[in-house]
Length: 187
Image (tube, rainbow, N blue to C red; front, side, top):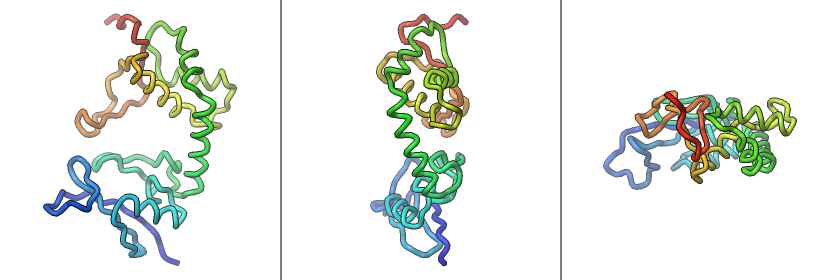
């Protein structure tokens, strides 16, 4: 039995970089221990799928967000396996159907001051009577709040918890939002 471990390597951009997947500050090449050539990210994902590995982390159980920052893979719960990833994707689809923009908008409407992502997620979970772990409530609520922010209904008022790559890639752990029409918080 062949071992299939796909790795992504970040390298400097060479002069002849036409056929490589370019990202800011470098490019990725993909290699598998079985020896199969993987020309780009699409080929690496196809190979991961064929070998029952997560197509997000390519079976490594770790997502490398940028060269200097990685985290446990959120798509497969850090297992590296495709079955767990498929279960997660189904749960995300169910959460998207269950936790609608209108539901979140209705739940945050009475809030007059700043509110945290975790507070809204807990309210959604309680309103729908969902046990912890049943659906990815936090990630879905985050996506809805970001959409409401993009639509101009909310304003993100938190500073990033981490600057991963300057100000272009930042991390928020439990951010605060407030309604766009609300006055700014007192200092």
